Length: 256
Image 1: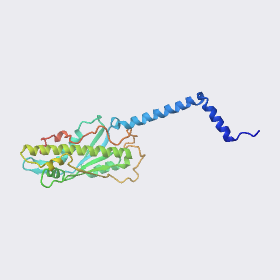
Image 2 (image 1 turned 120 degrees about the vertical axis):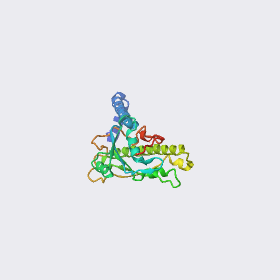
Image 3 (image 1 turned 120 degrees about the horizontal axis):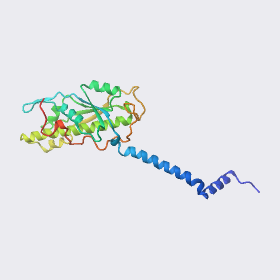
Image 4 (image 1 turned 60 degrees about the horizontal axis):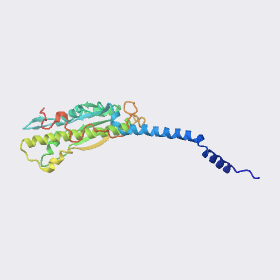
């Protein structure tokens, strides 16, 4: 009688195992449970990264020279906006460590040392262009967000998102204050100009420093820790659009 082929023997053995569930059911169940636990742990880290975000270092630079008006004297709206961002209550508490720099060079050096995830830079004519939003030739101030890909792709993305959200929200709050002051003074502001208040700045991103040899592990942060979050957009945002920072509350732009 011819012997069974190897393939036939393998099929026969597999069939016997399938007919004996106590042999394979326990290992299969354990494997399924392990996969479920891994999935739950991963999804938990991704679902709410804002809850785990803490002391993310982001820089603030105001190059604004301010502007002088007959009504209010000299104002430096850029300085007030950066101060407002730093003072804004955070959710979660202390999720961001805002660091103020006196010059662009200092902020870039900090990025070069991997001390920042990102940095917000307000231009020298920030005040002038913010006030122009209510005039006949409105022009949005160009704001720059410096990124740091050397800190790791995730840290850089999170820093960029937080920085842009903060400067847009704070600038909108400052523009709202300017609009309300103008309306209190009896000025008629066209609807098109009023619409600019909701989104008063244009934001561009650029590398804060060449990568060179600074690039570490793609999931490492600028301070050598592995970030526990998994999504680039913090939830909830630290400063939402239309939220006026404290020093720039509507009707409260101080003269300096």
